[in-house]
Length: 502
Image (cartoon, rainbow, N blue to C red):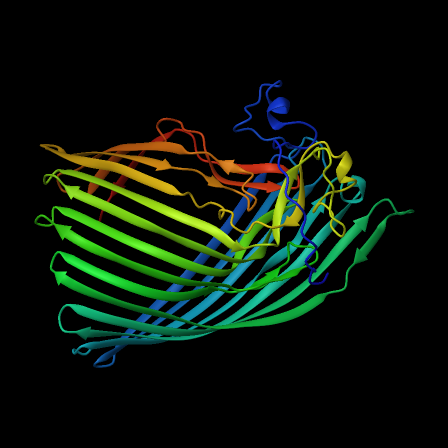
């Protein structure tokens, strides 16, 4: 295993999405399957997750300042067995065993004295250890279903950060906030594979790879600047500039292992917050612009979810929400968001072309279809994944327009209060791959509930329904070498929830 080099850029091509062999609809419908909700698999997917954690918070008044300590520990394990190839043929079977351990310690010193200047100083430490504990891959693509490959790896993290933030009041109406943070993330990788080839006589061949030991430290200064001014008790305006980053790491799901670079974002926002007409109407409006670099993009190849970097993107939009208290018992609310999100530079994008490859399609010299076993020109289903240019394309999972509207009404009776509530949501749809080939079309959902709360206000019973119109849509979509895949949202769901406050 080593860091992968970037292959040359291929042309893009599109055609109808398919699975291995034939289209999914033609394969699932004859035996009575539902092509929208059923899957093709030779393994019944199973997932077991165990997680626990604990935390301790201590606070001490030191006279004029307060000291706060937050200590926490979390331990999680994930075991899941699934078939990622989209067929009933045992091509690839993955049996993952993952773990994640985290210890964090934060200490804050906060000013408590009066005056125009408020401040907070703090430090943060995190130690993490996450990885694979013998995750196994079997199937026809692994020694002809006569062997296995076990993946062992761990990535340790030691993160140190120091931060400070201050708020200065310019009179009663204007506040200036400035903050800065320095973060140092040290990643340490240890990885090796154990493989067994049962086809080697007389009793098979067991191979243990060399252990990879690598380390990388990511250091970054980030900050926050903002100003707000209250023109009246009912109207506040603000502007802010924030720089943030998402740390880099080693991506062990890739073969060879790659180093993911940190993601950096400069976020600008201006807006107003208002309470109008005797505080009966609350209206908030914001405009934002994000300049992102080294965006971390997810991609599934041969059942493994990997991550790689896009060079940059620009995102800008408008967000608004409104709440209107018509009477003491009737409330109406709504919101909308318009967003323009495009890659500015992304010439290392993974571009998917469905099999069978269209006439005249050629694979550029130096490239192979990622995750493909055998000649790509003889494949009947799935996708050929190549490196190409997605500059100017939409970001995944970012709808251009979303909106919601709803309300609630309280009815007071002798046996308690009944509240009827409902909400309508619209999503204009989104793309699931950088090449914009895989798309989720626009969809609508409707939720409603009826809640009874006792006169003593300590007991409630809620009857609720979600996605009442039984709208079919996917919350996640993507293009893999095995085919186009996705996770569909829950269908019409209803139930009863009861609670007691004490």
